Amino acid sequence: MRESMQLRRVASAACALGVAGLAGCDPILSIDGAFFPAWLICMVVAGFLLGGIRFLVHRAGMEPHIGPRVPVYFCVYLSCTLALWLGFFRL
Picture 1 (cartoon, one colour):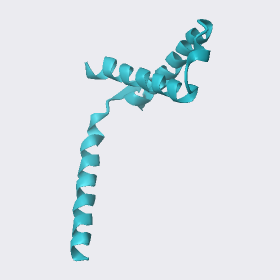
Picture 2 (cartoon, one colour):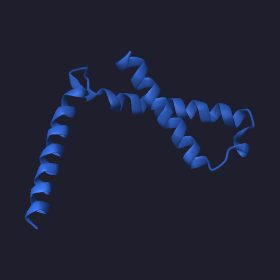
Picture 3 (cartoon, helix red, strand yellow):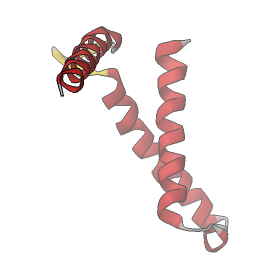
Picture 4 (spheres, one colour):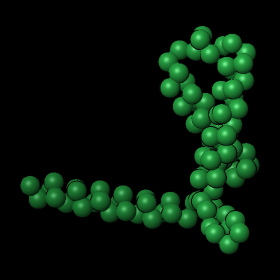
């Protein structure tokens, strides 16, 4: 019982240190005096990109050939978000 409690404390301390270490990794952007995290801006822009991509896929007549649409479009949205993040903040 004592080893389990000690292991839990070590795991909690390691988790807290990991979270504290990651807190400084996110760039903050100032837009008209308000500070926004960069990932939030990437998510909003990716939403607009997804809308444009879906419009193009629909206009091309390829939408009926897409498998389960929700997971596919979610993956496209996630890919756009991560590509924006990598393109603007990691290169």
